[in-house]
Amino acid sequence: MKYNRIQYQNYNETQKHQLKKDVLKLMKKIAPGLSYEQIGDFFFKPEIKTYRYFDIRNKQGDMIAFFCGYYTIISINGKPTHLYNARVNVDPNYQGKSIFGLTYSTMFRALASVALVKGGYFVSNMVNPLSYYSTVRTSWKAYPRHDAPLESHMEPLIYEVGKLNGYQLKKSNGIIKTVKGVSPDFTEEQIQRIKSSKNPDFQYLDEKNVDYLNGEGMMIVVPYSRWNIFMSMFNSFTRKKKKYR
Image 1: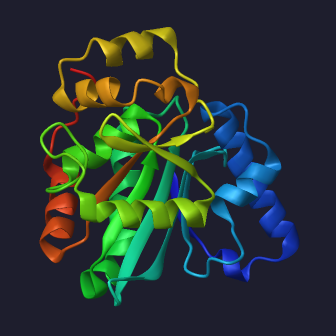
Image 2: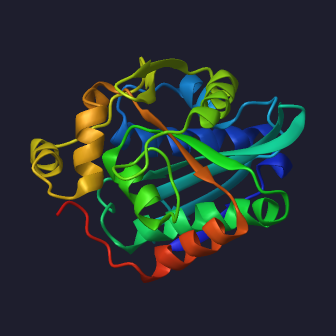
C-alpha cells in the first residue's frame, strides 16, 4: 500500500478531474448513489481554502482510502473559534484492517498541527457506524456518546458546520442529525452484527439514530484541547480494535 499527501492546489485541471474520478470510483463502493457533481460538493468546495487531502492506494494503483479535512474560523460570543471537519472513506474490502486505524490517525495528524496551537472543535457528520465508533472510542472526550450527551453550547458549532457543508439538519431524540443523505452500502450480515452488538457505543447509535441506513448521519463534536488531541492519538495507536462486540 502507498500513502500519499495530495497537493491539490498544485494540480492542473486534468489532474483534478482524474482525482475526482478516482474518488468517485472509491465512493461508489461505499455509497453507490453518489454522482461526479456530488464529489465536488462534498470534497472540493472552492470557497474553502484550508483543505488537506491524503489517499492510500494498493499495488495496482487503485485508491482504497481517501481523507479530506479542513478548518474554518467562526465567531462564538465575539471570540474567534476554530472548527475542524473531516471525512474518511475506506474501501469496504479493507474496512476492519489496519488501514482503518491508519486513516483515522492521519485525520488527527493532519489537523493537529493547527489545533495544538489554536484549539477549537472537530465537528463531523457520522453516517457509518464504524466511522462513529472509530472516532468516539479513541477520543478522550466526544459528544454525543453513551456516557456523554450533547451539550447545549455545542449546538451553534454543529449548525455552523452544517451551513458550510449544505447539510439539512434536525434535532431529534437528543441528537442533531443530517437528513436526505447518501445511504451507506451495508451487507445484511454487517447490519445484524451492528444491531446485535453489546458495545455501548453501537447500542447508543442504533437507539438514537435509527435511520442511519437511510443516510441520516449523527453530528458529533470532539473538543480539540491539547490533552484531548494527545489522548486521541495515543488511543488510536494503543487500543485494540473491537469492531462489533
